[in-house]
Length: 510
Image (cartoon, rainbow, N blue to C red; front, top):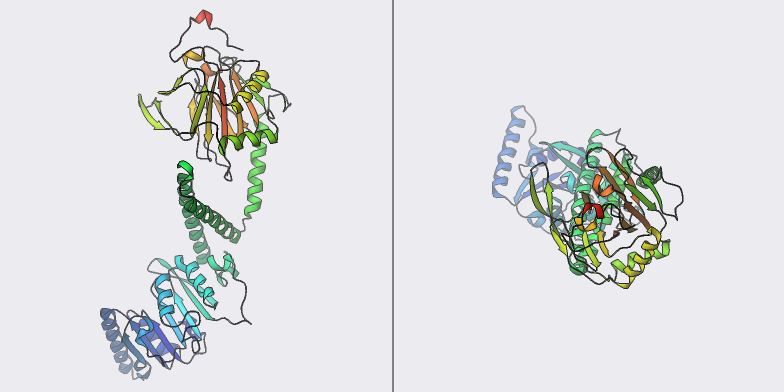
């Protein structure tokens, strides 16, 4: 009511979608309106409104009051402002109790949008949408040359609503309309969380909503991008724009709480760099050489080797581009069979990544067999370089493509019989840095982690595959759209099921 009183205080107030007409009665008695027109398209609501008006007049007369104010309420059945004659004046228009789409329709069809025929006399619009519709209503007001002059939050029947007061915007009063104005409000945004607990709750709910719709849009984008040929290019482009838009909204809402997203990002990157440096403790500090350390001396002689700069930046970028943009291999998402020790059964699951391979012999693991595939020249050259660095020979290449942070690899060991004992396994990583975990088989909580960086070479040898599991967990650090491809080199001693007497397999091929 005070939002309406804040106007000139005199004139014709029109209450569209009036429902029970209690607001119209309030305007007549408290807002100094000369006349109030209450409109609703529901006959049942108009009948209820008539009863409320009659009751109000009777109550005024019982206390000896003047019923003129109540008599000024003019109830009409109609859809929006169509119930008014073209020559009827509207000074203040109230639309309450409906959503943003209905409000926009009422205003546009009633000549109050853009250069509508009622803009000349209209001094103010008062809108009361659900708080969740605030951004949409503000966007419409700005597009139709209205300026928000007051905003208030109210809670009714457990639901938060927004009261928006807007006046005609002129060239003299026109100001930039920012995304902060849109999603928080030009007036509400001038307050702080400490000043208004209700505003704090409102922004918190908006933040939760933005994060959820961004998550859903990101999932939809990922699903679409994972289809052959990236699916519908137009839909992919639209979803990317949506995700970027929600990112911007989240940054603005966090800024309201004093959180600088850019600073937060820098802190995350700094923490990741700290973890990367820490993970290489115990290795000699020589990034261009392959250096080793025994992972758990009390468990076995199993070693991890790392060459952090096996490929220089240009070579790593070129390799990643060749495997993604015009791949010489075929990528596929395959099903594997995994053992569930807690249930004592096996289960077929879809690998949470893309897979490809090449090599001279078939390779079987987790219930799937990879048939021989010729090695492309780009991978043959890489294999030669890896063999020279490791001093080992390889004849099979397995590629895993981690499209985003949700792609992962569960704990497992490369202990198939055809690999022999103490197998040497090498892996080149290109793309986004990912964490690599090694865990003792006999002690689930004993874990060592290193980070596999762009252009790095990692080697596992000794008895590591017999005493430890390894995994690539899901990534909680934003990948910023970057993929990671791991190219793993193995030496297969024979086809699937091949075995050799233990006495002849006590050493690896190194």
